[in-house]
Image (cartoon, rainbow, N blue to C red; front, side, top):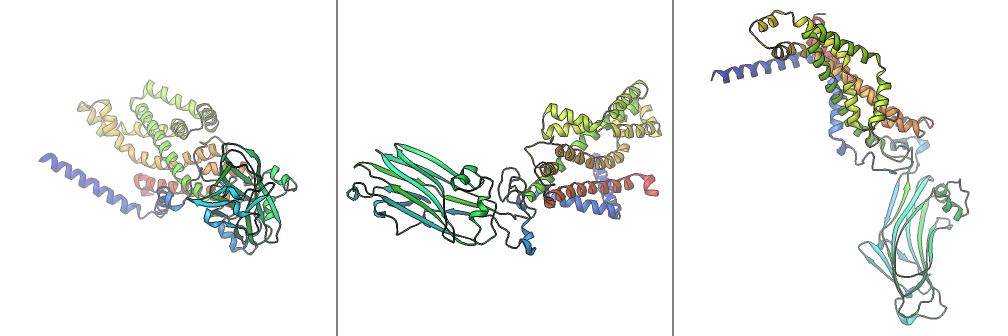
Length: 487
């Protein structure tokens, strides 16, 4: 019963101390500002999947490379800037052009959004040296300025019984009536085949096929008009023998025109959403900063406790090791070790922790040197307490205010160091961090193109997050350090 009452009293005393701390902390303007900023970053880290629908690494070519933010269309100059438009044409979207030659030769079907063309439809229609053509058309509108990039993707499966002499062409017809033949396949085929067609406007052979300059912009040439465009499949068949059949199975045809404006913060060099990278990068910065700081403070605290308490040879040896490590350029050593161990986030956290404890080891040692001469330590030693108990039950609690303040102030250093490593190309390439965003901007034209939406947000995020921890650290130092509080 007595033990339960003692525990209740201890719990009550702890709760009162926490309430008193919160009441004092609320009076610190810098501390409250830092706490609010940190809370926002923690919210972004937790709610990242809800704030953006895109994966920062996997989702590419959402728009053209280095696309501007979507809200830039409010500027008159960019009012009609091309937006990303993606048309996925199902089987039901296609119509048969009535001008097709002997279209009754073909049977057009649909199955699960797949377009199926089979011929000959009826054996009796076979005539010698007769041409058979089927024209299938789908229309779409394009109301923006000319884009820089587009692509068309679909899959074609052929099933042939006997032999079939056929040809397939894919055209794009502009509002002014100009036809561009993008793709064709022809010849005598036997058996079954599966073809994945990818038509990319940046493809030099495609430009040469259309008679254009290899360095020209095909997308700007074709989509130079606003209005209704036509996508046309032309299927031609020569003479088939009796018993020959051909079945053409088209998947959903995907026409994607990449825009030059996208999202809140535009896109990077591969068309990935920068806002998504920024939001998900909050997780990486907080993870690296907190874990690396915890590791370095733990090592520094342990070394400081041992050196300060035991003194003499132990103290001298540990402090000389600290001096040696402090004399080594930290960033240069980190670069060498990351290159040797591998660009992995856990390696970076481990190295930041192992190479960042020396300063706190000195600070905690000086605190322990003072505390071990206090009366309560002498009393514990007189009562027969072991060295371990004195260090961790008597001295450590009195060092904790310094630990908390230094821990919070160490996090910005870890965040900035990781950002520097990533900016130098030594960060983990499998994750999206703020330093990695800046590295990509520097390496792939963000700075030369003055793409401020790619450069400023990660830099501001690093600065604001670091400031939030600095503000909180100074507030904690004032509250927990009696000398600062009196001042």
